[in-house]
Amino acid sequence: MVKAFKYAIALTGSIATGKSSTVKLLEASGFHIIDADKIAHQILDEQHQAIADMFGEEFVKEEKVDRKALGAIVFTDSSKRRELEGLLHPLIYDEIERLSIDQDRLGKPYFIDIPLFFEGGRYLIKKSLVVYATKEQQLERLMQREGYTKEEALNRIQAQISVEEKRKLASYVIDN
Image (cartoon, rainbow, N blue to C red; front, side):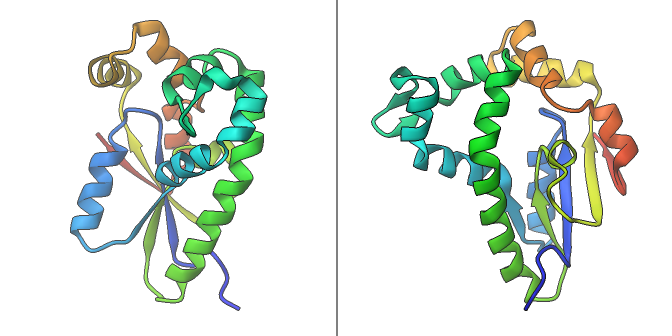
């Protein structure tokens, strides 16, 4: 049986560090990317009833989860965030593992874009690439790109291990 993650490289970094731009460059260079965020969004909507049961019907509209409204709660209440992660993370992991096994059969390196790679500790991936940006750059990007207030942006940044810590844990770093 093919073991998952044999040829995988975890691509990570904190919010608004430039992971999406890095993904585009890697794809243009011929690398396959497994995107944990895309998988998470799909699974979040698939789990809309469980989300409604956990957080309330007002967070679901036409079988789609209102991610912005849900984010306002889970990024300010760590117990709510852990509850949501407890539901979603095992399902996300299973799908990433399934896709990884398919990629490993090809016998060449590929990337798994996992924003919470170091936070989760669940993926047995030997190499990691961290996209780094300063906290000030992250704040500026979040406020401009997403229209967040400084407090909203800080809440999202602080919900993850600091980008400085991720930098120390990484096999490779792109300073963006």
